[in-house]
Length: 192
Image (cartoon, rainbow, N blue to C red; front, side):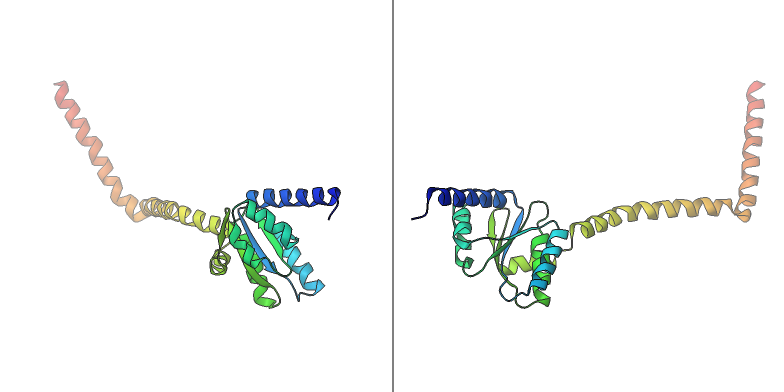
């Protein structure tokens, strides 16, 4: 029977895991067996750069946390070594980094995951991994918003440039001269 101190320590870890899962927008569980130290270090660097928290946690402690949160479907993938990658800010990042890394490193096996507290299948994780990053999506959106404004500005500038050409200015000048003369003759008629 474990001591009270050990039980308290494990309960604290379960509470930390619950909080981590509740705060995470997305999480991916993976089996990292077979990765070399260099590969594992490379993976951790990529995850850190993407703002993803990555840790290896005992399956029993993870099981307690996910069961308390109602994500019981993850029980079936909690066997063998399990690493957990979560992100509080980006739904796509954990899936994208792990799936991309697994393409080049067959030893990394994606087991399952969750998004906003709901367990998702391996196929859904792959779909999320194929979504462009947040920065790319924002730049595409800004480009599409800027495009009509840019076209309008170019069209207006073309009109201004066309009117400023010498041939057009000469044609427009006589029309302007006749208009004031007509106004002047109508003014004199009203004075009489």
